[in-house]
Amino acid sequence: MAVAYHSTRSSDHTVLAKQAILQGIAPDGGLYIQDSIGEKPLDLAKVCSQGFKATAFDVLSALLDDYSAEELTRCIEGAYGSQWDTQAITPVSAIGEDWLLELFHGPTSAFKDVALQMLPRLMSVAREDADVASAVDAEGTAGVVATSGKSIMIVTATSGDTGKAALEGFKDVPGMGITVFYPEGKVSDIQRLQMVTQKGSNVAVCAVKGNFDDAQNAAKAIFANKELAHELAGKGTVLSSANSINIGRLAPQVTYYFDAYAQLVAKGAIAQGQKVTFCVPTGNFGDVLAGYFAKEMGLPVERLIVASNSNKVLTDFLETGIYDRRRAFEKTISPSMDILVSSNLERLLYLASGKDTELVSYLMNQLVTKGIYTVPAQVMDTIRETFDAGFATDAQTRETIRSTWENCRVLIDPHTAVAKHVLDRVSRQAGNVRVCLSTASPYKFSSDVLAALGHSTAGLNDFACMHTLAEITGTNPPIQLSSLNDNVIIHTDVREKEQLASYVSEACGRIFAC
Ligand SMILES: *Cc1c(COP(=O)(O)O)cnc(C)c1O
Image 1 (cartoon, rainbow, N blue to C red):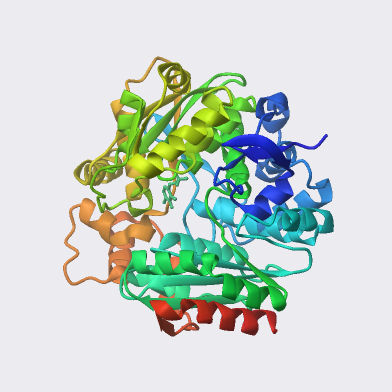
Image 2: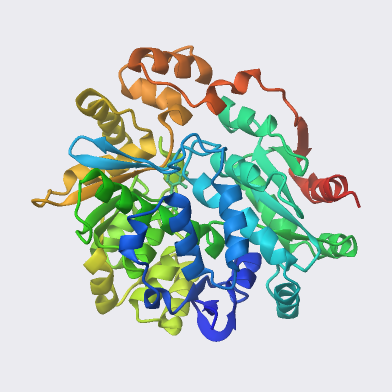
């Protein structure tokens, strides 16, 4: 029987993985989860004898088992091909006495590519499945509804990085389109160029007059806009999002935990069966939760360490059992981790509470109404059996970038440096093998990295910083970043925030030719 997914807030109604992927979020606002993760452990000996793509197949077959072998193979071949600059996809390298899991070799030089190269393909396949689509339609209440044969337009607002990763993932995927809004003048040169030079026959990119919150609120309003939904439905188009809570984004991330383990065995760093600790730079809790899934699926994991920047809600939570978002939002040099509500934590609360949907509903309601909740002690004990946490300030992050370069001759980005700092604070047990997840190329943050190395960045734009960084370290920037300046600018649209719904309508008309 196929794996049944249901909401973390109620198990009354179940759906298959394909439907969960098309819907993204459950109708009651909960996240889709399944109760049989541990029942299909992966064969570790097999994992250790094969490469990334074969392991991706085993992971996805276990988690998304209503996809056929042919469908999964098609998705995997498309997602992990020549758009990656190494066949290893996520190689492991040495960093001092520890290991670095490099997740930034994809088309946008950041770890979201691992999932966002796969999700659009999983959605596209699900959308072709008539049974799934009519089941989604019958649901009716999800707000986001996708139907067989209908075209799906992804709409997303970005503060910089996710938009580009989503554009690369959805470009030219059959039956799909993507519209990205970014705040005009509020993203870096590189981030802007990455988006406005985006190729693909099904992409729309638009600057919004206002800040990120304006763009995001306008995008949210688009999903609530019944008139627009009705108009688009008449033309055979539905709207959807590519949110990081989608199970189709989470599942592909489990692969690199298993694959990293296989690489460590192949290097002779561990014996098969030996436990490994992973330290993960964390924002929305998707990456580290995938590590927990891997553990549940049989990976020998010692500890999972949750690393935060000065938005350290999760560090405080692990220590006290109290999740308290009522605090000032700090803008840091690791912006993809500037998050106060880590959505995917809801899935861990469900699993660690012994699948208590009532408790999860209660806690999530407390979060919305009070901004704070307290988790029962025995649930925290279960969480602490696997998880540790720590944080790094910007000053500590800069110091770690500098010391890692000086001591290990490895150049790391600010997000990775947060994790490295936290890992260095944890005392090493004899024989403990530790992996630090590296989530972005240092060249994506050239200016901050250059400054951390003690160089002046006064008067230098992003490209000059990239150039100087390469020169002084003798390393090479990824070609897709260094060549950005030479690319043709394709997207020049700018809109007021009141005009975004009509922009989406126009984009659908242009892209789906209706
Ligand atoms: C998104 C992101 C993270 C955080 O990952 P989560 O899954 O949200 O915890 C860390 N580093 C980089 C570079 C990212 O883009």
